[in-house]
Length: 343
Image (cartoon, rainbow, N blue to C red):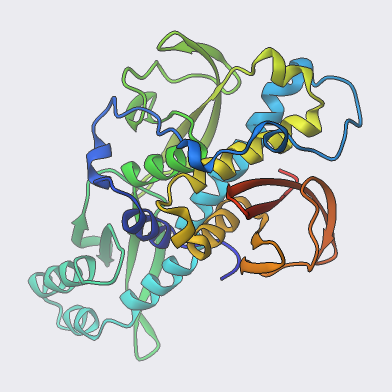
């Protein structure tokens, strides 16, 4: 599997590898998930980098961390617009003989039934579908708070007979994925008002780069634009924790690699036991990061393939590119190597 991993696949992986009830995270105040100790790197490995190449990152540390976390949040959102699952669901809608037949009559009750059957069909992941013909909404089925709409046309004998808007993700699902993969609080805002997130008492919509306090801790707001369903905009505010003095004393390169490493070990902690899910973990981390991930036990390649030899830290060439390596021991003697992308 390569490129953007489908969001539905990520949800399925998480649901199948954790002792938690995913819908239970809907309530505010569920908090930010924390990684378990088994997946964390040890001292030297957790901060590894290719050596200091400049002075302390200092005041640029927050921006360096935000750049990495923004990259992951954007990749998750991009998968909801054009990932494999989206393309498959678009084809599912456009190929529905039941829906085409209902539109040709036309019969609004039949259109509604066909749309309902598509949205609630097993093995598909469409959270909302709206069908429009001659400017009239004939059916609109699915949840109320939906993100990342995708539009398309319905055709019969090569002729457009209607249009539709669909989505594979709701607001809760997106905030849940971002929080579980990055480990940072997030809140969605519409027209300045909070609508969904992981912050127990969400603040008024922050400005991008604004510093603020949540539950007694200092954060910097990273605000990203998203699309609401069926139109309009949402703002996703990701709250980046203020860096420690230790983090600020590192070079910006080391701060970047350490941030990627924190995300990697956080994702690893979602898989329990990790040793039974190495392939799923590799696909997931590669999908949300754009990096390369390999699991090795001595010379044995357990997941991810990759170069014959990998350094525990420093730099390596792979697929014509140079990568900084972050690695840690998952369970001795197994080591995970994460070739971190330039965010």
